[in-house]
Length: 138
Image (tube, rainbow, N blue to C red):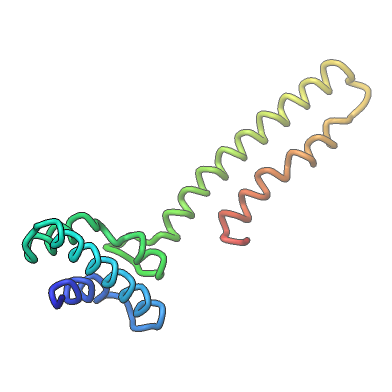
């Protein structure tokens, strides 16, 4: 099915040649051809079956992202970094509120003993972990 192969090759034009690309391309082509054959067995014409299969397959952005391709200015790593920036901001706010509460409780109930430092160190791991995740460390 030449049209299917050409269509799949067109999808992957912007990806540099690699074994992984060829393997994924072959797998997608094989799956699409099987779907076309199944639709043809059910009574569809070849052209209708090919068009329906291509439309139903949908977008391959996720597959391209897995291969590390930048799509129309969209970089998956940048999106993840923005997502973790939000988590980092939330963790910093949460850390600040928790520490403020602990400082208040410490100074209000036991002003003679400074103990708020200990829970502060324990809670500091939350934004620190989010910071390293935002940096991209594992």
